[in-house]
Image (cartoon, rainbow, N blue to C red; front, side, top):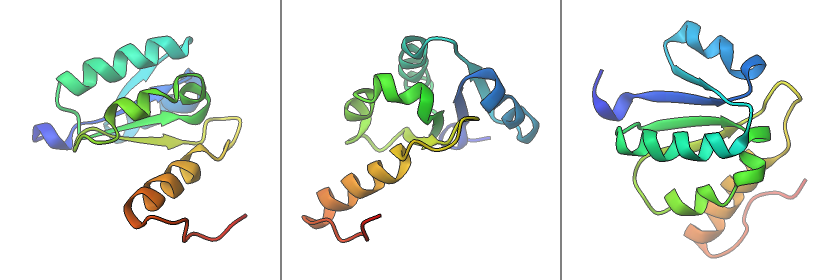
Length: 108
C-alpha cells in the first residue's frame, strides 16, 4: 500500500468499529481532543484520507482550517451512529464557495 493510499477512521467505538473489516486503520476516541492529536500524528505519517465522525469533529472543527490548504490528508466528516449533523455538506459548500466565489449549491 503506498503512503498516499493509507486511510484512517476516527470516532466513537460504535461508529468506527466496522471500518476495521475493510482494512482501514481505526482510532476509537472518547474525547474529541484525542482526535485532534491523532489527526496531527496521521498527517506526519502521510495518510491520504482521514474519515472522522461528525460527532467527534464538531467540538474540534477548527482542525479543518489547519489542513484545508494542504494536499493531504483529506479530512472527511462522516455521520456517526447518531446520524448526520450536516457537517459534511457544510464543508463541501464552503469548499465550493472558496473555489467558485459563490454558493452555487442548492439550499436545503
